[in-house]
Length: 99
Image (cartoon, rainbow, N blue to C red; front, side, top):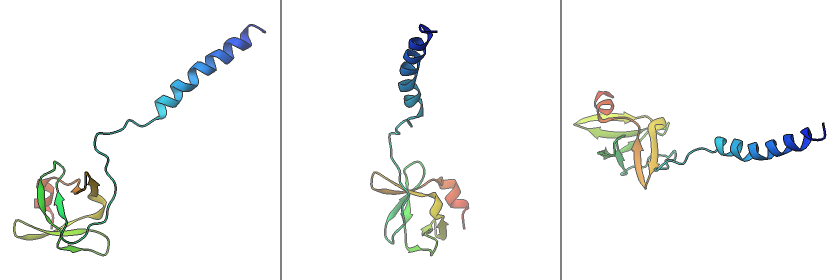
């Protein structure tokens, strides 16, 4: 029994840092944060291409843009900011289908 206790303590000491590392999130290359749209800000699609500038912001924080001659509402929950740019998680095809 006396020999078992030091072995258990040593194994716990070794396992604790490994468990802590397993819980750490892996950092991503681009850090994105939720953001509120403002009029005049350029919006970029999910692949980083320009969609258009915000001409109005809805009460719910959604951004309204003109895309290919029609008004498109970009939902607030799809908006984020990365590297100083306003991004939407929507693709160009999603934006083209939106109303």
